[in-house]
Every structure is written in C-alpha cells, then in structure tokens.
Length: 120
Image (cartoon, rainbow, N blue to C red; front, top):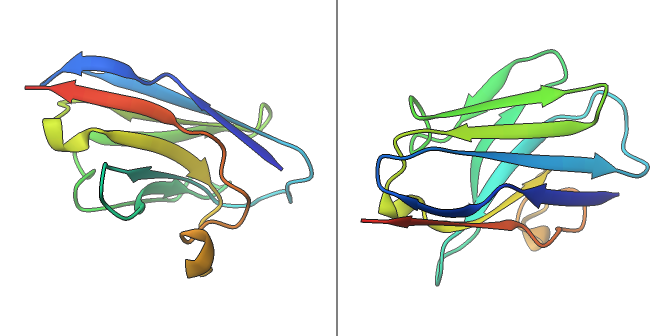
C-alpha cells in the first residue's frame, strides 16, 4: 500500500489549505482512512478519520476547523483545514488508523507526508 499526501505549503495564520492523499495498492475495501501530523520535536498524532460510510472522528485540536472527506471511488482522502494556527505547523500524513504504537498507530508504511507551515 502506498500513501501519497500532497497539498501542503506555507500559509498565514487564519488561512486555509486542502490536503489530499491518494491511497494505492492492496488496501482492503471499506477501511477507515485518517490523517495524522508530526510537528518538529513532537510525537506523531492523530488528526481526523473517516469510515467508508462517512462517519468522522476528530482530535480536539481539529474540531470546528478541519473537515475530512473521502472519495471511495478514487481511493483518496482529503483534509480541508481552515483558520489555521501556527501550532498546526507539521508534516501531515495519511494512513489507516491502528493500535500499532510501534508504527505510530498507522496500519501501513508511512508515506513522505506533506509539510504545512503556518506563519504568525
């Protein structure tokens, strides 16, 4: 399984970005897809996830500002990020959430991620 995130960039505080992640390879149908992020010097953390049926879960830091969506036919998951803050600066990754703490709670090997930098 390959996870290719894109859409990051430099944005001012209060701005918006939309991230995309193409999931390719032998992924099981119906898997939950999620976004994670890792800020400099910090652990990778969960941001949001969505089931194939559309149920969503958000970290407290993302609630009210971020929206996750997915296109099941294209195996793509999106993250719309609004009202960005400098503390949102991180490399953002997508993956299938799991209980595997040795793999930072992701099921598959992590892709390169996409860097989001929010300036104050």
